[in-house]
Amino acid sequence: MCGRFTLRTPAHRLAEAFGVDALPNLAPRYNIAPTQDVVAIRHGEAGRELAMLRWGLIPGWAKDPAIGARMINARAETVAEKPSFRAAFRQRRCLVVADGFYEWRKTAEAPKAPKQPYYIRLASGDAFAIAGLWERWRDPAGETVESCTLITTEANRELAPIHHRMPVIVSPADYDAWLEPHPASAEALHALLRPYPGAEMTAFPIGRHVNNVRNDDPACIEALA
Image 1 (cartoon, rainbow, N blue to C red):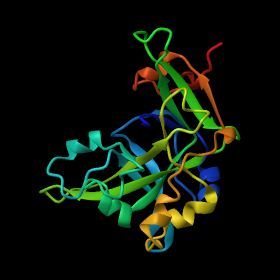
Image 2 (image 1 turned 90 degrees about the vertical axis):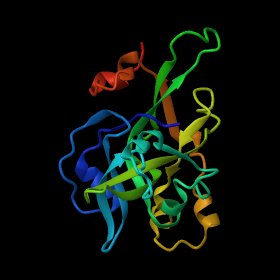
Image 3 (image 1 turned 180 degrees about the vertical axis):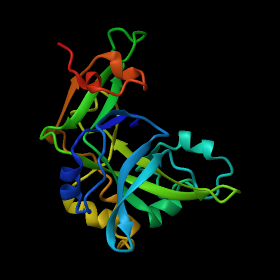
Image 4 (image 1 turned 30 degrees about the horizontal axis):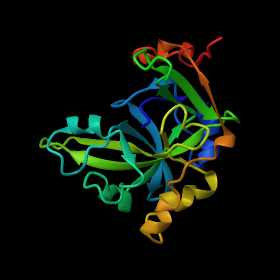
């Protein structure tokens, strides 16, 4: 799964990388967690647009928005069939912007010991796009909540020793295909939901400062000595 990530890249670099208008000033985030707002790119009336979406997808048919806390990830293998995600997979795809994410490794030598957190990013240090889905939900009073989920797939060979799943990182060349409102086919979309090449990524162990969601500072990504 993917349960925490970072976004520290300056807004002007994100605007250039994702082909959107200048973004509002975004404070560096070191510990983005479910139910918080995340930066996403989606297809709008005038092309690509920025949206701030609550992390944890709330299906349109949901009676209680609390269900979103259980919908932070969608599996690539079943996303097209699951009732919670299939409508969004057909019509409401997005790119969630990040520049690193966290996973926790259980050590075989001490299986009962606390899991070891790792920080994972592109070797280049650049921001990247995670394949996502978004939904618009309205409560009985008419208030609207726009939310999203991150799609995960099996981990590549390099990350598998840390965790068996990883977020689907979409290559820049595939942004348009993923955001296209009228894709060629479901098969064409599924072809994009593949593990990102491990040779282009790096991962290193960090301290347990990140375990506390209230900690949102550079100490979260400090490598262990």
